[in-house]
Image 1 (tube, one colour):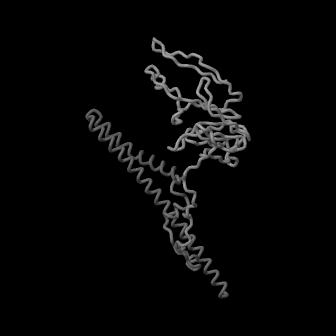
Image 2: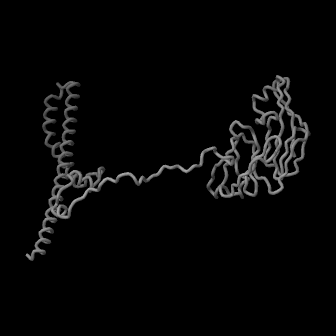
Image 3: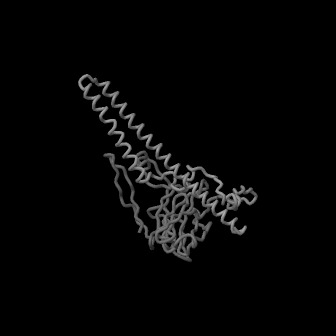
Length: 314
């Protein structure tokens, strides 16, 4: 059943609702929408519309009621209008849709997997699109039709999709762009002869080899860290007597500025110690890379000499 209430203003500034009539739709209601009979725009009872009732504002509105078996357009409470009956299947979801600036229409999702569009207020079918391959038609009752024509529906148990049955208006011509261009020139690959490779020709620097083996973010080894700590402790122990004697001799005569200057000098010295340790660490890593390169070169030379000797019969 469809109940109609009149909203009447009160003298104290409020509003009251009075029952005006009842209409029987005789089936399960899918959607109810109020529209303007002049242009089809939504005619919902917004706060601004209700506030204009006090000034005598009236809207020529009608109600579009969609059920599983048909649709009716009538002016409540009892006036009759156009009607449409679904003969082939039941309607699971429906809504009023505006297509760009061309006007308003009624879009419904039906049990046969189609999305049909009907004109307003004549309720004549103007378009039909099959959505069997896009949505799970068993869950059409849970789908949402937006005011712009988009349909949000279930594709699987936990996946949804959105599309416009009326089309996006974009050209479906296949793009001519290609990810692979067969006409582009392929740069030549760096080559090296077998003799050059076996003789140990160097193409990378020790630092490049160090980065290649350990990576750019390789932390220092435990041995390097222990060596850095031991060197720092030795330097602290060597500098401690000097600092102690200086502080004892000038204990009471040292002012605040002199104390701050001495602290800055000590911190600068510690930073220099850390920088020297990092320089030593880099030098050790470079030496290790040089040793590895020399060892590889020696092995290659031995292999070359062994092959040449075996060929010559030595």
